[in-house]
Image (cartoon, rainbow, N blue to C red):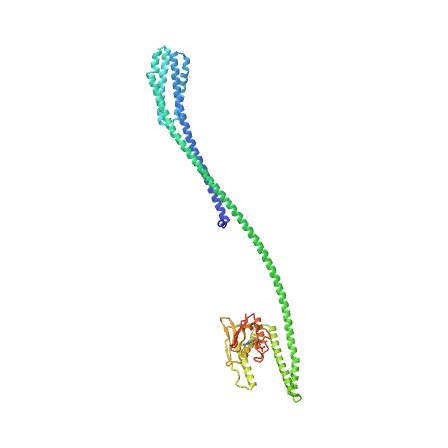
Length: 494
Ligand SMILES: Nc1ncnc2c1ncn2[C@@H]1O[C@H](COP(=O)(O)OP(=O)(O)OP(=O)(O)O)[C@@H](O)[C@H]1O
Ligand SMILES: [Mg+2]
C-alpha cells in the first residue's frame, strides 16, 4: 500500500482508466461468449425441432395416404359416396403435405431424392385408387376391385410408399439422434461458457472491488498526509514567526544592553582617565616636596627620617608608574582604531631596537658598560598584517618587555618572535621563568601578577593592555608555558 502511495496521482489515474477499460472489455467479451453459446444452443434446439417436424410431416403424409386408402376401401366395399370423404380430403392434402416436406428438407439432398420417389409412388397409388373408384362406379365386382386396389399391385405400391416413408423417417431419426446429441453438447458448452464467464466476471468484480477499496484507502491516506503536512506547516510557520519575534526582541534587548554597556564603559573610561590624570598633579607635588626635603633638609633629619623620605619617594614613583600604566590602558580603549596593511617584522624590530637602547641606558646608569643580560633576539615577521600598527606596537612592547623581564635571570636569555603556520598566529617566546598554566586564564586581567615584586617588578597592567589591543582587532590571545622553561604568548588579529 505504501509503495502504491508513492505513485503520483496522475499515473494512478491512468492506471485506473486502463484497468477499467480492461474490465469493460472482459465483461463485454464474457457477455458475447455467453450470447454466442446461447445462440448455438438455440440453433441446435431449432434443428431438433425441425427434425421432429419433418418426422411429423412424414407421418402426416402417411396418415393421409392411409385415410385415402381406408376411404377408398369403404367405398369399394359399400359403394356409398360418404366413405369417399376421407379419400377426397387426403387427395387434396397429400400434394400440399408433400410440398411442406419438400420445403422442410430443402437442404437435404437424399430426402429430396426420396421425395421425388414418394411423389411418384403416391401418384401411382392415388391413380390406382382413382381407377378403383371409377371401376366401382361402372359396377365392377368388389372382389376384382379388391384384387386390383388392395392386394397385388396395390399392396406393392402401398408397401413401396411405406418403405420410402420409413426411409425418410429413419433418415430423420438418425439426424435427430445427432442433433439431440449436438443440442446436448451445446447446452453443456453453453452452461460451461456461462459459468466460466460468470466466474470471470466474479473474479473481476472482486478484483475491481479490492482495487477501488485500495484506491479509496490511498486517497484517504493522501488526504490525511496532506492535512498533516498542512497542520505541520502551519505549526512550523507559527513557530518560525514566534522565533522571529523572539529574535527581534532579543536583538532589541542586546542593542539596549550594548548601548548601556557602551555608555557605562565610556563613563568608566572617562572616570579612570580623569582620576589617573588628576592624581598626577598632587603626586608631582608630593614628589617635588619630598625631593626638596631630601636635598635641602638632609641635615635636619636623622637617618631614620632620611629612610622615611626615601620610602615616600619610592612609593610616589611606583604610584607614578601605576598611573602611567593605567593611562595607557585607558588610551588603548579610547583611541580610534585605524587599520592598515603593514609589516609586522618592521614593528617588532623597532620595538627590539628600543628595548636594546633601554637596556644599554640602564647598564650605563648602573655603571655596567658591558651590559648584564646579553639577550638574543630572533625576529621573523610572518605574513603581511592588517591592523593598527600603533596599537600593535604597544602590544609588542609589553610582550617583548615581559619576555626580556622574565628571562633576565637565566644564563642565556633568548627571545623569539615569529609566525606559526599551523596555529596561524604570531607568537613571542622566551626561555625564562615561565608560569603555572593553572593561572593562565588570569594573566590577561589587570593587576594580576604571578610573580612577586621582589623577583620581577611590575604593576600587572601590561598583558591587560595587550589583551585589549587584540580584542579591539577582534583577534585572540592565549599563552602556554612550563615553569622554569619559558613561556610563549600567541595572538591573531581577527
Ligand atoms: N614572559 C613571561 N614569562 C613568565 N611569566 C609572565 C610572562 N609574561 C607575563 N607573565 C606573568 O603574567 C603577569 C602579568 O603580566 P603583565 O605584563 O600584565 O604584568 P607585569 O609585567 O608584571 O607588570 P607590567 O607589565 O604592568 O609592568 C606577570 O606578573 C607574570 O607573572
Ligand atoms: Mg608586563
